[in-house]
Amino acid sequence: MDIVVCMKQVPDLVEELELNDEGTGLNRDYLKLVVNEFDDWALEQALLLKEQNGGTVTCLALDTPEVDTTLFTCLAKGADKAIKIEGDFVGGATSHQAAKLFAETIKTMPHDLILTGVQSVEDLDGQNAVLLATYLGIPHVSVVTGVAVNGKVATVRKEYAGGMLAEFEVDLPAVLGIQAAPQAPRYAPISKVRAMMKEKKINQVTPTDGQVDAGVRIRRLFKPESGRHAEMIEGDANAVAERVVGILKEKALVK
Image (tube, rainbow, N blue to C red; front, top):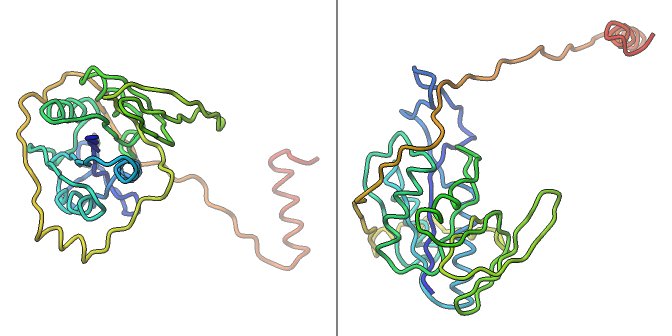
């Protein structure tokens, strides 16, 4: 079984984010990128399926800054191959652009199952798997929390709002948007990642067609405005109690 996992780098939300001068996106000059959390879950699901059924796992990513480290980490975790799609993606790519680029590359390689994160912190629109399946012309299921494969059929567990679960059978090849795997993503020690950098190589491909005129265009972003800060009440117990009652009366919460 040939499994392809589409990986994406996203801004590290732990860092302080700044808008660009136009206010249309993030200032990427000093932006730290990390692996999209849901794509890491997709990789873990792929590796589990490989351990259960055999086959190969190939990780695919756009040529963004520091993506080589991400792909070597995938190899250190157990992926068999890593492919980088060449291009100018320093400013990122829309869901439509990424899906088209991934699809054009996947069409040239063996694929029984394509896994990707259900969404990313950059857009939260959940379109990645849907669009990828559309461009490839194959079935799709998203918000997936479990996968089992038997021959050319996958049994997929899908989660709905409110914790409702459903089980589907889907013919392969298919695209799955992974929300979670049966176990947490495995850890790759730095020493093993460095060993992969010496032992293995990342294949590079040039897309033949990545142009698409669709998707959401951001006109303006704004930083959230800070509201009124909390009032710290000082004094003894009687003074504090009197002030609390006064505040409640000011807000017409008590008479």
